[in-house]
Image 1 (cartoon, helix red, strand yellow):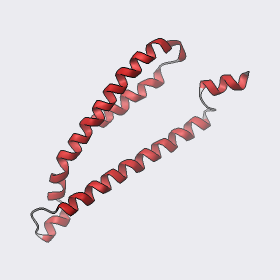
Image 2 (image 1 turned 45 degrees about the vertical axis):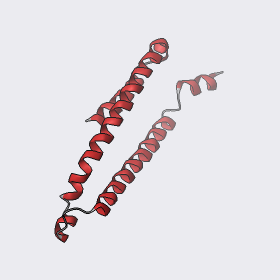
Image 3 (image 1 turned 90 degrees about the vertical axis):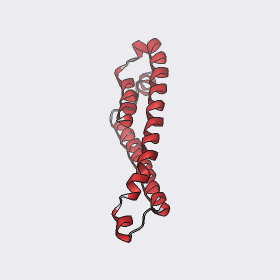
Image 4 (image 1 turned 180 degrees about the vertical axis):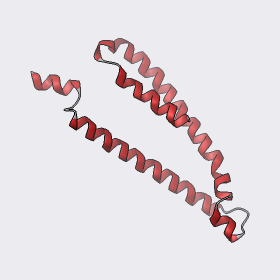
Length: 113
């Protein structure tokens, strides 16, 4: 939930045009603080659930171990790798949208000159 709220707060930037540039800076500061707070909360939740997920994993239960910190590290590594991969895919998708739309307003103005 915190990740969704943080991402949604960044999408609000798309709703403002250049006419609202004066308000955009104040809103940008507020949304940046909000999205960073949501990211921090998501990391807290991620770290708090990690031991529970690793403890109740089938790999640990099948071996009959109570705890396995190596599996906890492995699970954490896979989670972070998936997060970075989704970030790269999101960046590539946004670049495709930017190039297909003809660029930003600044690029269009420079082409018209």
